[in-house]
Image (cartoon, rainbow, N blue to C red; front, side, top):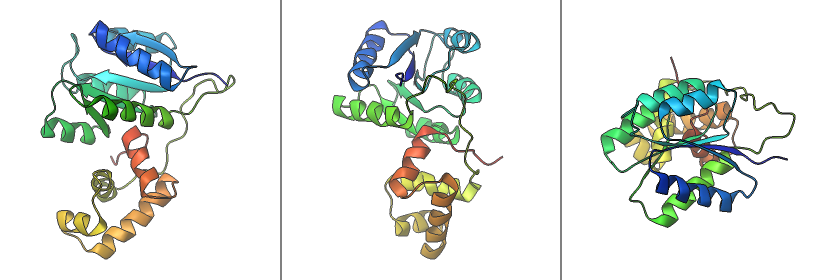
Length: 206
């Protein structure tokens, strides 16, 4: 069993070092690679190096905002991606969710919160066997637009009643959507569904 391959796309050397040390503590067999620009990250992918988990800075020297997110998600639709940034803005979080990224952590977050986020993302990236070839696993059945909306609300910790109120639908309809979401994602409970949401591994509706 080989360790997870982790790509850190970040232009601040000290932050790269801190994240690298954290990942090494959480997964002693992890294989780390860093890229200071989006171009460097894309070059690594084109060279055949496929990560199991990506930590991405929202603002890079050659890609500000969602551009880096879009390009990496296009090339790695099955890989868990965690976005970090010094800017913590609700609108940015919304745009990231729309782009299929459920996990965002501010660089000013408490150390315990940051560590827990990385730990959970590593859990979403299964260790690769020697003969896996690191090919993408097949994606689950895509969710409908309404199911994605319900799952996003679930990810914030809201109850069925709160989700119903926010989306202006009945509680019974929310329950039905939750049952269907669990089935389509192939998970057993709401917690596992939220974990899949954070990984961005499900297909967004066209």
